[in-house]
Length: 66
Image 1 (cartoon, helix red, strand yellow):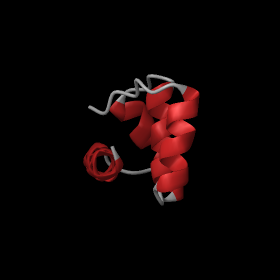
Image 2 (cartoon, one colour):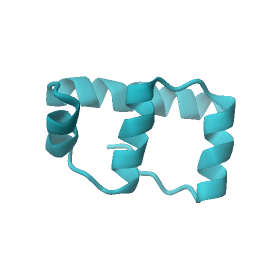
Image 3 (spheres, rainbow, N blue to C red):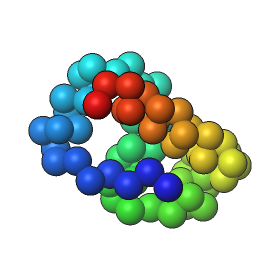
């Protein structure tokens, strides 16, 4: 699970350096709000595995710039 332990300034800096899809940006916000995978999937009208794949993509993007 992607743990968002960044400050707002750090997160804004990361967002400015990386192109995230709209869905990925929403998932980042959901993680900041500590939503479960199930709740995110329901909100996005998709499967939990889709959310997990998007989280993996987010992690990879962040690791490339850190």
